[in-house]
Image (cartoon, rainbow, N blue to C red; front, side):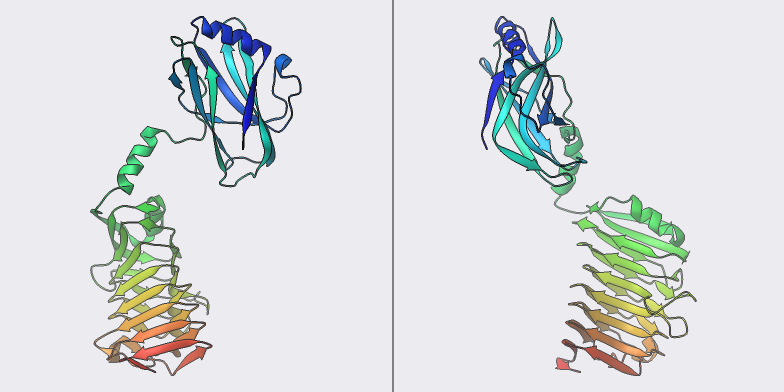
Length: 363
């Protein structure tokens, strides 16, 4: 893409003033979809579609380079970019259309897309006067905004952060956290949470640990959904007692595109309604020393999901379930040597390609 600039008559007059020592003060740069046919006499760019962000001018000798950025993300309507207009402040006339740049190839700007175009517009100025940008860089992050984020991104170690939160306020606490976690958050929970909890879209070098001092201190009566998290989500000493609203679609823990580790947790259905833990969408779940009681399905691995179940007291950890293991479309379940093949259920159910492995052998 090439662009060719041309001064307006008022722009040429302002150029003469800057050559005599005045400062070129740019007020705004706009993008348009029209065609300015008589540039010398133009006072306005036709069909203006958006204001571009202008960075700090860089001056060398009698030349100033204006870095200009076009971003489509915040646009409400798409358009075809054909020209750019630079507006400047004339000391005698106020704001004028200073010059017009034409694109040799019109470019489609799709509203809401991640399209970003960068232009470097050269202007002739006086050596002493230089150039100054009066318009704010709309939509651009400043260095003061960026510095704290850069510090977190470049951190080589993630510190620990310990908090105690009432179980009923867990969702509020999670929603207030940044999606980029640069700390290991250890959240001790107490009490009962009777709402669905969503743990979604966290990433970074940190982790989330949801824990209770002992099993029964924190009770969930509905689903905890972990989705699209690249950080590990750890659960310790938590208890699920599904309530009367439990349905065949209710899971104590639903894990998708994430990794979870549950240690000494208790999963309990409501009169064999509700399910224990499901891992699907290329997720991984590890259950260590966990209890699985009175569930329609104890564990489910689907669509590339993987579950490992380990325990040392199988007689008390698994009982009263209808289906122990439910598999479909690439699900994989690994069982520890002491874990019963049916996880306290009456049978396992398989659909299409899947596997249950225990002691290095298929079950």
